[in-house]
Length: 95
Image (cartoon, rainbow, N blue to C red; front, side, top):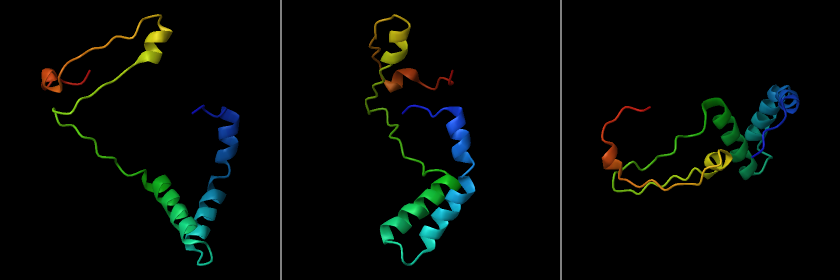
């Protein structure tokens, strides 16, 4: 997704309070459809508390494949495949 120009982001952020009030009004409105009330409530919660954490399967028997083509292409390098097992990494500290 392309980033919005700084001026547009800044302008949009001036409407934050109004947008939150609108979401709260929709979430509390008995006349709003249930789907709109749920969507408004979810938007308020995710903005206030962050989106829920997604579980990640970290078992060693799970294959992990990462391809970094974009960066390598910009550097004029051909993509390479590096194979190995998660167990090969052991308990190495993060770089």
